[in-house]
Amino acid sequence: MRVKSVHIAVVIFLACAGSAPRVSAQNPDTMMPEQSVAKGKQILADLINALGGPGYTEVRESQCQGRRVLFGHNGEPTGNIEFAHYRRYPDKDRTEYIGKGRNTILASLIGLDGLDFARGGIIITLYNGDHGWTFDRSGVSELPATAISDFQEQVKRNVDNLLRLRLKEPGLAIRFGGNDTVDLKQVDWVELTDSQDRKFRLAVDRSTHLLVRSAVITKDEETQQINEDVSIYSNYQLKDSVWTPLQISREHNGRRAVQIFYDSCKFNPGFADEIFDKSSLSKQGSQALAKKSKN
Image (cartoon, rainbow, N blue to C red; front, side, top):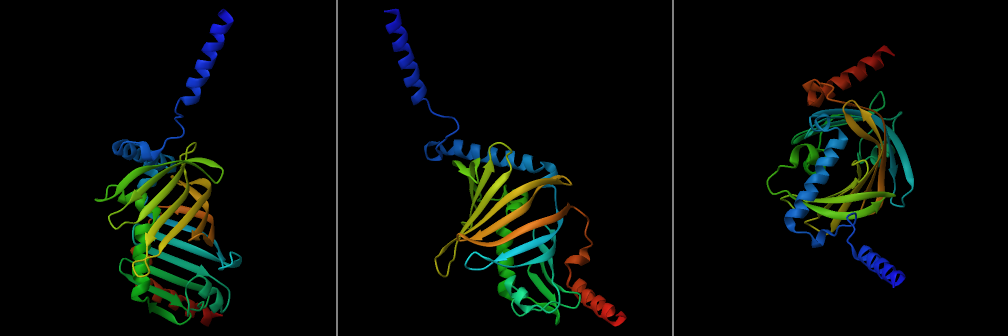
């Protein structure tokens, strides 16, 4: 009888253990809305703290240098280019592309059709709010209205802007998106939807609380096509006060578009206002001409 009782007890224990819900596998669809919101906010808080806490959220400027590897429609690399990227959040952005000699093909590959590398091997794109310019071999040019509107849309989709500046924005909805395995890492998903129906999905590593992957999902109002832009983050290193991914891969609708390798990053370097002004591009041209005359 004693053996039988022990056997029954073991069976009951195993049955209970098998039916007990796993804490690690929460279903967001069965959670109460307030629970889902609370968990989503907690994941975001853990993410921001892992990125550096105030050292991350108080960043207003960044300066990074590296190389971009570009991919064609077949997913094969088509070229690479060095760059220097200067940002003042949320909407001031200067990128300097460094090439060698005349290279309109490489300019086209980075989305700058019709431009050519200036003397000294450089093309510059500069955005300042609702204004934008380029500098190339032909000098300084105004960017078209479509390029400005595309940039302003990218500002809204930027994950750093989202985490630093937009989490308290009216109309921003936050919810827990479930557990998953992404890039061989156990992650928690958090989903955010803004007042203009941009949907952000962030995969946060359950161990390090760093961002593994982000997806921004939007609808093209003209074609009604749903577009998904994915960023994959790796090789985190501490730069100044910020844990920074030194390798980022970007995909558009499932197709690899660009892979970015950063050599260095600085935060809050204290830029002069001029660096984001059109006048700095004119000065760049003058310096290039002076350099040529010396040679």
